[in-house]
Image (cartoon, rainbow, N blue to C red; front, top):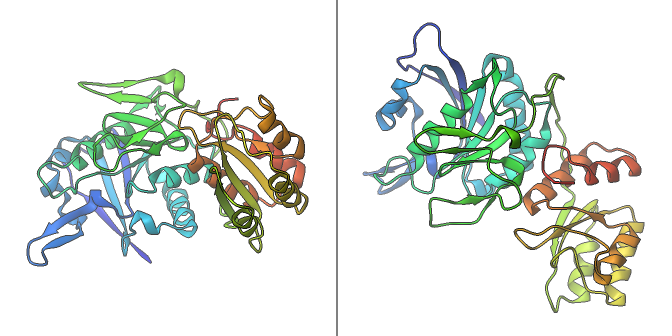
Length: 355
């Protein structure tokens, strides 16, 4: 994998309002239709002004780093997240904001992972993408890109307006580790059920400052480790002991995100509770997440979750599955003692849960 840097020659004057780095990883937003090949191919960002002439109106310095070969978001890996964090770290002092162009299918996972890896972030890192390729007439790519750039370049009291990892899609700016993809055929692809938008774009862009994380005083700290030895266990009525045992006995397993019913409820079968207890005793951490989109885990509220609380399953509050599994990777990657690991999994690290 390699990167190619392209400077976009807009009509920006010598004293630009902001400098923005665009990182293109792949995805629908960067695809155009090749008449000869008769299929979609990756877009050449040297020609971006032809497809998005509105960029000439920006009073910004724009630079694009393209990842080659491009990554279909279904193929995104932990190494790709670490690579993105490193790219931002290397270019952090040279730009006022960052826009990451990414496929929509796993954007919620990537935005969550980057939110943990980029500690004390003082600049905007905005993920965006598209449902329709930039080269087609009815594309949402131009609108998403233009508005994401505008938000990335907006400052408040000299500092940036949104010092966190976010997702901009179809008029809404959402916290990255609160968003999840809910649509595959409509433009409003992302929702944040348990946290309000950070901004909304209409005739103007309205920022909701009370929902945006405060700008940290400490310098940026980039983390470079994620533990891949984690799994998501989704419960369903009729799930068998054999299935759960095969998952929990995965060699090298360190962490489990268990998707439970309602407010964190699970079966009370003796074999099920015994398997969970044995797993915890082996040093594996279990984080309880609700299957409900607007759900919140409240262990101990019902008898069917009291057992989990008593054995040491960690309550995930109102966290999304995407934010939970990447948080598990991040915290376990720090290789801390048991007490500190449990504390971090329970805490609100980057605005991902409401305590």
